[in-house]
Length: 475
Image 1: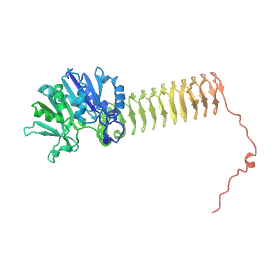
Image 2 (image 1 turned 30 degrees about the vertical axis):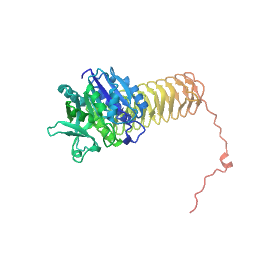
Image 3 (image 1 turned 90 degrees about the vertical axis):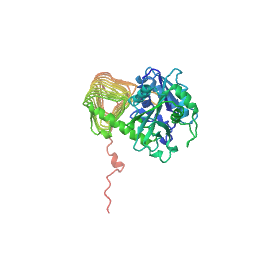
Image 4 (image 1 turned 135 degrees about the horizontal axis):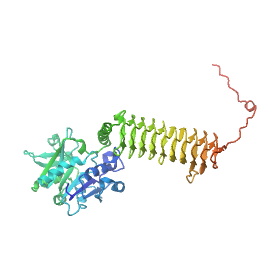
């Protein structure tokens, strides 16, 4: 595409039908906001600059853009925010956006901010048509079997486009037209500079419609080309949560099919949820109900049983994630065995061949090769050396009410069941800790640490308290 191309993204609307306090463009589909998805589509045309028109939820939108600026797809592209303080329609928003477009830009692409399945490849034919014809304006249209809710493309008997009419302003005859407006326009900057200031709000909504630039072009003898898409999904917006869910189902199907074709087994593709930025190696098995979120990496030959949630984490080759585990911002080494019902909270780093069993929780820990914590254990702010066994019911008491403290356990230790390790504390390599101990002082390597009260049996106590078995009541 021409290096003189710049893009305006219309992202100022609240999206009233979403019934949300969050701007519509910040709702997510398969892990990415609608805004990010539209920016990615536009960035594929290599524009010099993208102007995002903000309005409702401006602060939240700016925060999203800050998170996106450093991503590779925006490399070399200037991103600027212009604010539409008063919501006066799409035409008004485009005019505000145009003020941010460089004076020497030749072409301007206007995109709606809520097109979650839009791709760069959907925009290329429109760009090619405008450049080939030397047209002043290009419009992307679509044939839709159920056009309700969309603006209609009005054509002359010769087939030339004459206008776009929003549905609220359509006649009964015009409502029967199946060719719809996608709200995607590509035109000369000089054309938009002349057309946008002429728009009027003489319509059912009392707004300045961007669609009226087509009528302006026809009335002023400007050349207009249209490109009609035969695939509705990529060019449709999401105005309601139901529409968003329908589009997400389509994209999720595409993602899941692509991974299966790449050698990944999905036990139940319909009920498997994989975000866009997830990476999965071949010969991995993913059970029904699994959710892989964010920037998760699953290496080769991993087995993930159903109902697990893995987010922003890295699972290395050959590991087994059993039923109903939650793993967030953590790394699991090769050939580990996790779960069932385990919870790896942020900062958990597991080396190879670690075993984390049922109802074990970790946070901000480093577990070296071969560590085992098989049952009902909490390990937080801790480092555990290789080959150590952590008994059932063990906890690291890492929080004193004000600050977190670290527990260090050496290699080849044995921590007995029901042990409380009160941090800061250290257990040396090869040490043993007796079951039921509350360890408040460090245990030297090779030593046995025992910290519990001596057992005392009081004969006849039950009889004196008259604690006897109650006989069954007679009916």
